[in-house]
Length: 157
Image 1 (cartoon, helix red, strand yellow):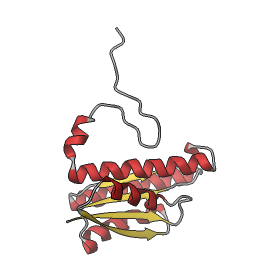
Image 2 (spheres, rainbow, N blue to C red; image 1 turned 120 degrees about the horizontal axis):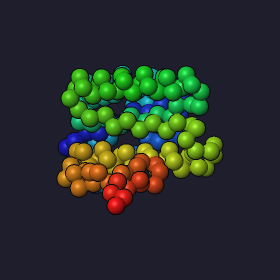
Image 3 (cartoon, helix red, strand yellow; image 1 turned 90 degrees about the horizontal axis):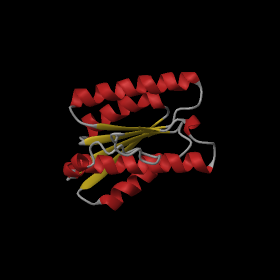
């Protein structure tokens, strides 16, 4: 039985973890979910590291929603570096799923984007654990989480 860690924050304005859990549960079985919620985005790397060390998860999904201010982008970058470091230390994947508040208008559009991106990242996490061949088939397809796919680049001649 695999173990999937989900780390999310109270700072986020959408409960992205619930959307990710639903997507995982709809994708299949053979795993247990362990969730840790922390105050802010810079707390996610430690939450993921603890999920690896204390809860023995095989993979983490880190969910965060930085604000609109420039310092929020800086905090997100720092958190991202911490997540990369934690994943390298464990030699296990951390699927980072951040939604910046300025990516969509406030209200239903932002909520839809956050939920959709969390669901799509959760499905990628499921594929990493159980169906890596699905990811190989989709390589180079210009897939985007939360927005319409860009599609593959095509020669213009």
